[in-house]
Image 1: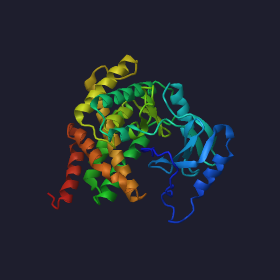
Image 2 (image 1 turned 30 degrees about the vertical axis):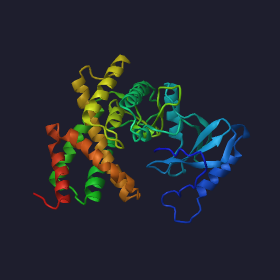
Image 3 (image 1 turned 45 degrees about the horizontal axis):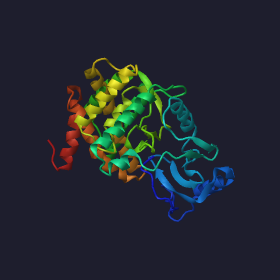
Image 4 (image 1 turned 90 degrees about the horizontal axis):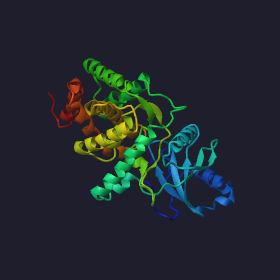
Length: 361
């Protein structure tokens, strides 16, 4: 779920991606009928329905006014999306004390959820307003506290990150980023080098303790706390799995949507590590070991993201994700340049830049 629309009046709703121009929005019509069928006690004002946000999936979100504030509606088309994981993970996180949307009404057959509203501004939108450093630190200390709390939640019913799932994610990098996006399929030597690197990353990541992993714990999915609260609202958690303890920290400090430079990354990593140790989470006793763990986890995640963003552009026509690629590429280079075992990866990345500049060696 990306930056929400903050207007309080109804606005034209953009058609779902892939819908022909001028075609009726059948889902929107069905949504309107569903809202009209809900109990009058909710005080819903259907004529105020307006876009709230969308994300990289087929889900859409709307906001509407109600007698006691505002509500958010999720539109998750059956066959494309499934509301059940959202409901399940929301329960796990709520039981752990996190601020997540309450599920007020649901229609799983149609793929509609009526949710409580956690506010209109996420971290990403607030950061682009250039808040003072003191506020940024307050927001991110709150996020780190929420992360430690989230990692103490149950993992009942969650799929596990295993060797196959991590390997499948890493395959997006050569298939979509190198081959499809840059037109540079890897040769046999490069494939062997990447396979070796991928295996090292997978082994390292699977050796870490297992906790609930949000998978996109970063600025677009963290809501600025509502008045009187200090904890951020947490969104877009339906893809949560049981996996490596450093995954969500890597998501937060190497944010694919907002650049954090290494000194800030380390500052927040140390703060998290200290909080996690105090809470009894199974992080390494030596920060140097922990630092390596989350960097290697971050490298796996950011290689995957380069592939995902390339796929979103070329397959799904979502070119906006191309604007984030230089940032993610820089995060990859930050780690690949620090450890000798990743030099073959660095050479591949260098070859892409040489080709773009019109020469090669």
